[in-house]
Length: 219
Image (cartoon, rainbow, N blue to C red; front, top):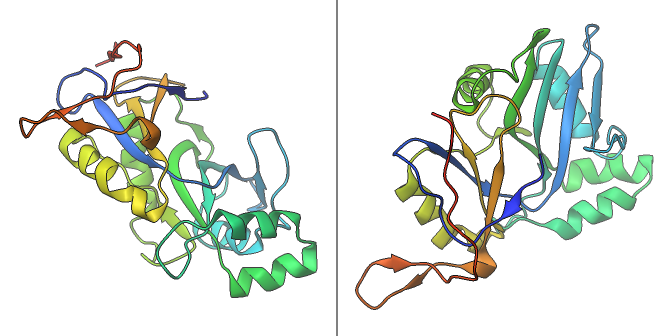
């Protein structure tokens, strides 16, 4: 489900909302078939296998058959910032050039959701349940590899800290989902262009633009 832009943090009980940084990259699905063949594709089905061979190889090496991952293909520059221009260069490169760039400007696949695991459809589980399975799947993987577990928290205070500081790395804002929702839950996006500002009393308030606060209807 595509995210709906909002202008403030949603209402809810502690732990009710899941927060993730919105990375500037290419949304992609990694589909591993029963023979361990890998299909890396966009949401609309465009094939990324030849464009990002290092991601395909990492998925083949570390992810079990009959599994589907949802994530973002990104490029971290040596400065620590997200580098979308490198992604664009890769996207328009031919197969041979892409293979060269995979070595000189390697990209990463930041995975934030698990849709199928070893042949079992897990989309009926609540988001927090899918996240737990995803963390188990990534536990043996190298921390600095091409496959990366997307940052995720249920702590609003931590999410607010991310929101205030991670823009220096090129993070666009926060993505928020109901942690207990089953299936394809509603998704909210809080962009940095509507950043939180101080109210003069040491607390935080939100720059309002006429959007009502969202509530999480799921437990």
